[in-house]
Every structure is written in C-alpha cells, then in structure tokens.
Length: 384
Picture 1 (cartoon, helix red, strand yellow):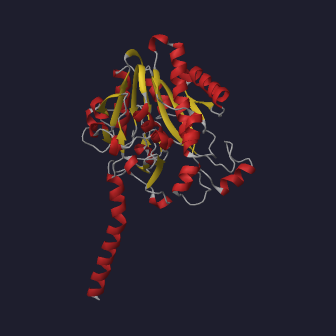
Picture 2: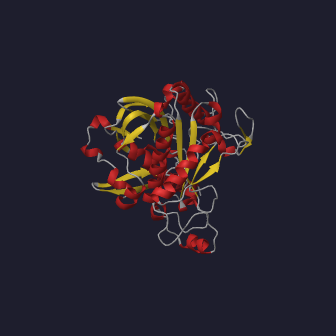
Picture 3: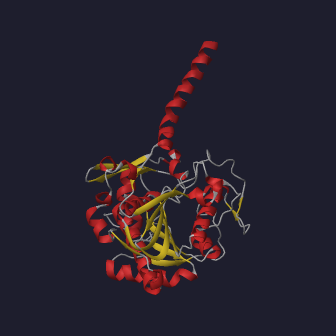
C-alpha cells in the first residue's frame, strides 16, 4: 500500500506540474510593442507612485509629445484584460500615432497583473493571434481582475476608499473599482493612485478608458461620462453616427457608484474622463465555447437567436461583432473626443495623425497596422 500511495502522490505531482506549466508560460509571456515615430519616451507608472516600483503591477507609460505645445490626454487600455479591443487600439496608436500638437500618454497594460492572469475555469484561451502582413502577432488573453499572486488575501467585503462604499470582495483586484486609490492601500489602489498622480502632476486634460461589454448588458456600445464631460461625449456620439455610420450613445456616470474611472477621475482632478464600451460577445453568458474564434469574430448562434427575440442591446446579425469593428470604434471615438476638445479649447489643442478610423479598420483589419518587431530597431521594441 505504501508503494501505491507514493505512486499516487507522484502522479498528482506530475499532473499538477503539467497543468501549471502553461499558466507559468502565460504569466511570463512578453508581447513585443514597437515604439513608433511619435513616441518620445517610455516611463514607468511607478515613477508617479513609488509603491509600485519593482512589482508585477508596475507598467509602461508611452509618451508621445508634439512639436508644438498644447493639451494633454491619457489613454488607458486593459483596465479589464479580458476586454482586449482596448489593448489592440493602444498598441496600434503606440506604433503609428504622431502628435502634431499636445501630448498623449498611453498605458497599454493598465492592470498589468490582470493581463498575466487568466480564467481557465471558464475555458478562456491563454492567447489569441492577430493576422498581419508579416505573419501574426500573439497577445495574452487576460482576466478582469489582478492575480491573487500579486494581491492576497481578498477581504470579505471591499470597503472603497475614501467613500466607504461596500463592494464585492473581488473588486479589491479590479482597477475600475479602486479609483482614486491611495499611496498606502492594496496594490491595485496604488495603481489607480499612481494614475491619479500622473493626471494631477502633468495637468492632463482628458482621460479615455477603453473597455468592452456584453451585448446583453445595457451599458455597451457607448461612451460613459460624468456631467463635466457630457457635452463633448454627446457631440462625439452624434458625429460618429452621422459621419461614420456606427451607433455609439452616451450613458451618464452614476454619481453614487464609486471607484470607477469615469466617476473618480472627474471628482478628484481637473481631467475630463470618458469610458468607452465596445460590444464583446465573448463575455456574454449564453454563448457556445469561449474560443479564440468567438473572441475575434464575435459570431455565436445563441446570441443570434437572442437578437431575433430582441434580447440584446446592440444590433446583431450573422456578421457578429468582429474585433476589427470594435477597435475601429475605439479609434474613431477617441480621435473624435480629441477633435471636439480641441474645437472647444484651441489653446489646448491635441492634434494627432497616423491613426486609422473606423472604416479603414473594418476594411483593412487591425493587423495591417502592427509593425514587425523583428525588423524594427531593437531599441524601439518594448515588451509588455
């Protein structure tokens, strides 16, 4: 019996190692990002809040400075790392955008820990590949919340600082529930505090936080904005619908629901916040398997049936909601926010070129705009 027990223990150890190795590889996989002609420097978010230094939660901030002074904007992606259209948009801008006037800060992996976390219990793929003109570019598929390897244990209830609102225990690892953060709080509060310090110290005018939401969730395919940002958000919504042919409505930021970027950034700084939601069928519950194909093309027969029964909050047909369409919406809405802000504040103009809009992305695909790291100057390649 002793020999059998030893054999069973060894078998369990081997199976555990075999299961753990892919997760270890995923956690340490590096996504190459080519700093394009507009990037003038790359700094760490931890420079704005030293409590992040040396942790897996610290992350790169790409800075694009124009030849002429103007306003300043911050673009956040992968606040929720299971909503990857924002990440692809951020990488596209890093690799292609040129600032003619003003300054743009881009954080492609805002919750860097969540970007190295995953959800195998829900059948999430570990990676997804985007076809390009030079092959394919691989990205990690992350999770909504930071990994417990970085922040543990979770409390029974998360008490938001400073409002003391009671939130789910998981929200302590959700960087869209920990704003405005604090320097000595849990690690994800340090992340949002560092971003707040960047906004305040650099006097940033606009913050855009890119997300994705289920087709069955009413707050999707929209711009979420507080009252101080609502005029610009409304102009943007009407303009992209009239000029570019896609729907994108405005949702008000709830005054009494705390911890969200579109709420706390506006309340704790002079920055105008906007949160963008693009539909992501992958996150809907009544779908087929959570495959890479579903993530990229957004086609699902169950959602199609629900659409015919008028149970979805976005138009949905056999074409699904492909990734190129989602990235296109993020690009066009972000560019239009900057354009409308510039029209109202010419002394703080933010003028950017080199970034495609919705129609170009739908036609060409997002992969057309990614640069081959193998052919780039090694000094310009950063690993996220």
